[in-house]
Image 1 (cartoon, rainbow, N blue to C red):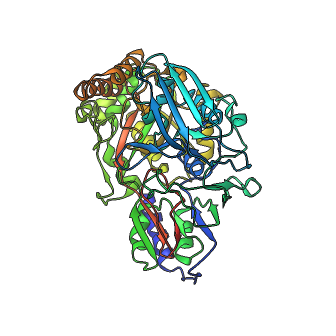
Image 2 (image 1 turned 60 degrees about the vertical axis):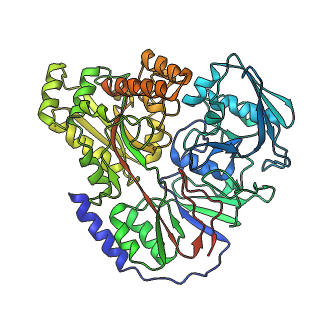
Image 3 (image 1 turned 120 degrees about the vertical axis):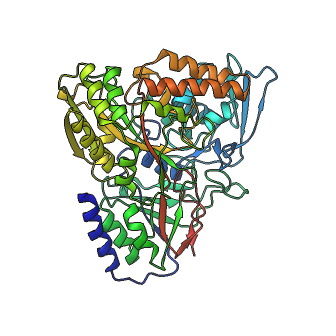
Length: 524
């Protein structure tokens, strides 16, 4: 493919790049994120890069560790009433926001309420919340209409749509509107004057942050900020980013292009490590509101045509240690993996053409919005465009930057009015691992995630999973939900992969997890 030829040239340019000496100790960590940071509000968008930014600025009441269990973060602890309908969460002493004001329980209650209006797990929780309130400045009180045993799992969930805490004055903003003032209580302050979308962002250590005493574990434990300053450098071209890492112009590249990994591995000044040991899932999302994908028969024709191996090889190359085939709506290796979902994925172009003809497809335009500046996503759109053309669809591949895709995917208009038919993305396996945490299998319609699959049955099954009396019942319900989501093509899984992050050996302490956490990283 043309992509392979281009990347061979990029790898050669990296080998030829001269090494530039860098001081062993530095006050600034220079970091290249996975994509451009265009939206700052972590409640308004599910973009992973926004969530990664937010871990710097905001903190959480509870966070999930590598074992999948929520642990206290801003919280000192909690207690639950005997009837399970009143939760009281006590804040740690001395918590401050970046503007110098103390963190109060009412700030937390307002933040949870705003988060619950957009996040799928939060929406389920909100249905049984009578009141998000506060007993005093350090005690949050959540009153429920019925017990909700998974409350901590909800407010402590990892990855995108995290329940970050912000001041009440910001948390009272309508959840459908963005906040632009970044005031949190996390280990780093956002420097608004140095934010230039498409170019850079900057953060400074917040001296008022008091870390927990425990060892850091993903987003839990002691978030010790060792670098006084962190600068994000937005570099969309992989060859340029790779050369900058080799030259010592940057210290850390979040997601190197897989084709460049062998070259980087040969550099004795660079370390590579798996960033998220649970992996990630790439996916295709169809717009259920607009033709032609408002017809389930046409969605199924596309599903029949998809060959996951094509997507994984085009994106991550031929090293199969970095990716795997997974025909399950819940990622492989997670408790609800359902491989019999694969009966719907035939990887058969002839069958797809026949199904498309039988469905009465009459040439409606299929607009694929595809980011050219996101190496882990861009090839997915190219493969889909090629596949759909082969089965006879009228494809319009519209290539833009990731920031435009993130904003445009919220449009519910027809393609003639700036809407879309397909976009691609990925997320952590942990985030997609249960009916409550995965937006991909939720049938909330216009209240749900982009694509807006509408399925009352899926919502019923999600509630049944939450109410299930034992693990066997939960597994049975999750399997039924997964098969429903695949048969109606809520989301098309494109494979599972394990990315590596790259950093110069002049830094150490890089943690694994669902995000490139800034804490614990220090000069070597």
